Each structure stands twice: as structure tokens, then as C-alpha cells.
Image (cartoon, rainbow, N blue to C red; front, top):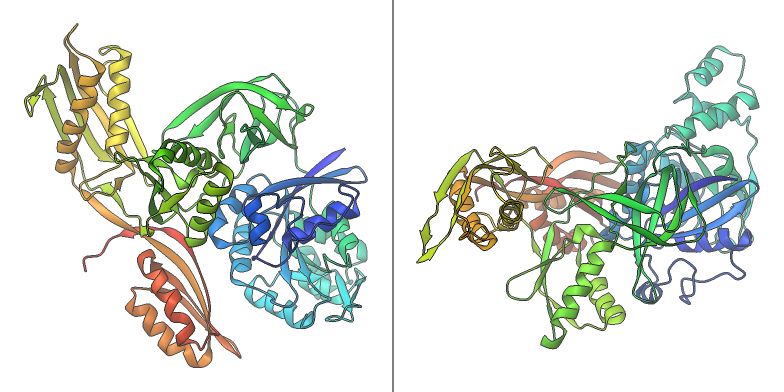
Length: 615
């Protein structure tokens, strides 16, 4: 039995969950078709997902075709949950990118295709809803080539498109259009088309498989998840064109945790994709975890529940004696790992009823294990700060806290999150000082310097290890990282390197509390000497606007500080691309409908940060 791990990706409402249901039903994995409208689908099993009719967390379901087991990963479609999608991409062997035959290429579809092509992940395109009024085939193919990628060709065609009687038929593989499309990415087919002899069906089949496997070409299938038309052809394409992953059954286990779901008894179930080795129940494992401050920690424990051994190439749900978190890694992995742009919004969460404060904090820490990018961090006032991608994510979190944890929470309006980075190098030292009438029985010298971009926070030593008791070393390091959450302007400091250059203690007077109390004082002086630069988050954006709205929209974007990367015109609309300060995104979103008479389409997502310009 071979295994394929395939993700289903799409813009919201294109029919991902319905397609998953159809695939499971047609292959005997479920005995009845669920419906998004009635809230009884297999993968959208959360109460909030059923109520809203959208996928919020990645879910895994499996079916078997011949000697191939296919694990389907149903991913969210809303842009606020893009990090959930990108985490799933890391563990996939291939993907099905879903489009609606009616709505066509949408903003999120373009984002997903760009990511899939960057990762060179084998991807099939499935055009859903061919039986709905307004469905298109040839016009949609032209849109796909213009707005997604030119390297596509249909392998099926539709008779009666846009009617309830729409039917799918297989195109002959010696179709001239397929040969011409493949010629753009396959040199052997290009030579055959230009110089002859014409490529044979066998040549086309071989080239199609090779170019799909390397992510440079994308076969297109038409169908309907509701009626089942085109589904057998899509499944045949999955098993034939998406290559089986190389696996190494021997050696130490290597894998990654890409999803964590709460269980009915309060335990947490982790979904682990295994690349090599084998994992069995009761086995002891050590996983690597990248913390919010950039440091790496180890999580050791035992597999407490696993349905049969997990072998290389497969995905399994397991429970672990230590709490696992999304992103935890088993072994040193070299496989592709998407880099997630961090959330650009920050909010403060408080319990509506003071007696629920402890439950709220516990619930938020649990949710942070499912999505580490929200970085739940307690504050001194009893509230918790969260990082977010958007308003929908905040609404979902509020509903989750109420329904799953029984906690009523109040969220402050989200604000843009700024970051500080050290400008230069600074150093400070204190030897057994007294500050504000408090004697610190400790000597600490710290040097602050810039770290590499994306390194987070790094703590290092130039003192002799063992010169201080371990507890004192730990107190200094932990306090450095905690203190860097508030920089010179009040923003979090990142990409720093702090070095302990001097240390000393007086036994038996010195305690860890002395080092915890003195470290922030010395660190602050060193940071002030180094200086910091303030950075603000940016969003990459695309705006599709009618021809007559180009001038007012570009003027509005320019006044908001946008930097344009492209403006391309079509017969009915202009596409404007660029980058914009995150603090101005909401303003543009609100103004665009009025500037475009309701016809404008807007998409944006975090794209990094830049130094804040003086106003």
C-alpha cells in the first residue's frame, strides 16, 4: 500500500469541504454525504465551522483507491487563516487547487497558486460547480492562463455546462492543445512540435507526468462535487500524476506536527507527518520547538495513543505525554518549510467576569498550541495579548472561547504591531549595586548587538560556564528574553543578540531573585546605548478595479503610502499590485467599494516589515 498526502485548497466557498465529502463517499470511507449547509460534514466538525459554513482548521480524512491510500487535508479558505494553510503545505505530496466555474479566479486562489508554484508542489486544478447557472469553461481557462499561470491544459471537457445535466468527458491525450501547452515547459515536446515527428500519446503522457511532478505544469479537470461528475477522472489524475513520495523506513524517525486538535476528554491530538523511520505506541520521542523569541527548546515524552504503527510517508493522529504544539519537529528535518509572515495585528483579551481570568489564560495558551503564531502572552495586569491576522480570526477566537471553554472574553480593538531592532552595539555592567534602596547581590555585564534578520532573540556567553550556578544563568537568560518584549518605544524587540560578558555572585547571599531583578536594569542601559530602530508591518496587495476607477484608486493608494509593483490592464479591468503599510489597509478596504461602485476586488496579506518612516 502506497500513501499520498494531498491538500485541497481554494478561495472560501469554492467547495473544498463538499469535494472532500464526495471523495470520501465515492470510495466508501463514509456512508452518507454531509452538507456544508446543514453542518454535518466529516471534516468541518467544530461547532463554529458548522455554524459559519467555513473551514477554520486543517482536517485529515482518508480513502483508498487500488493500492494507494490517499490522506486528504481540507484546509481553510479565508485569508485570516492563511498560516493554517501554509502549515499544511509543508506535509503534502501534492495539491488540488479548487476553482468555482461560476466565480472563477478569486483573490485567495491567486495567493495559493503563487505559494504552490514557489514550493514546486505537484498541483492539479479542479473546476467545480459546472452544473450551476453561469458556469464557464473556455472563458475560465483563459482567465486561469492570464491570472494564475499559463502552464495549464484541460484533461477533461464539459457537455451542457451551466445546466443540471452537465457531463464530463475525457479529452484524448493526443489533443494538439495539450502538446502545445506542454511545449512551453518540456524541451522534448517542444522539439517534437516544432521539428517533428509529432509527439505520440505515450510521449505526452510521460511529459505530463514529469512536468506535473516537478510543479511546472498543472492539468485542469472539470466536475461537480455535488453531482459527482468528473470525480473519477480527478482521482485517476491524483494517483497517476502526483508522484509517490520517497520514504526512508530505516533510521531515526523524522517528522513534523502540522495540526493540533482538542479531544473530547480535554487531551490534545496531534497530527504528525512522518518522513522517515517509524513511530509506535509507548515510544519515547524528543521533538524540537522554535519558541516565540527565536530560541529552540526540546519537548520529550511518550506516545500515549496511536492506532497502529506510523510508518514513513504517512500521517497519523496521536496523543503525547507532553503537550505538543503545531510546528514541533521530530529529528533534524531538511524538507521544505514555508516561512510564515507573522501576524500584523495585536489585541488585548480580558475575561468579562473576573472569576474566569485563570480559565481564559489557560484556554488561550491551549489555542496557541494549535496556532503558535497568535503568541498568547500574559500581561502584568491579568490580561493576555494575542497576535492576529484579521477581524474574522478575532471573531472566531471569541466564539471558540465561549463554546469550547465556557469563557466570555472581551477583545480590545486590534492595533498594528510594531517591532524594534537594535541599531548598534551597547554594553553595560553593574557590580553588586543598590537601586531604589534595593541591594542586588549580583554582578551582571551584558552586551546588546543586532542579530540576523529573522533570528528572533539569541542569548550567548563570553563568561566561563560554571562561573555561576545554573539557576543564576537560567534566571539571567529568561529575564533577558522576557524584558525584550518591551523595548525603548514600548514595542517588542526582535532580531537581537545579548551576550553575558561578566558575572559574579556572593555566596550564600546571592539568590536567583537578585539576578532576575538586576538583569532588566543592566539590559535597559545596554539597549539604550545600542539604540533601536522601529519597524512597521507591510502588506502585499492586489486590487482589481474597473477601467474608469484606476485613477481614483491609485491616487488613494498613493496617499496611503503604497509602493506599486505593477499595473496591468485588461479589456474590462485593471490589476494594481504593490505593498502598503498595514496600518492603512483597513482604510483602503473601506474606501474601495465607493471608489469602484462596488465592483473592486481587494486582497492583501502580511509581507514583512520596513523601518518606520518619519511622518
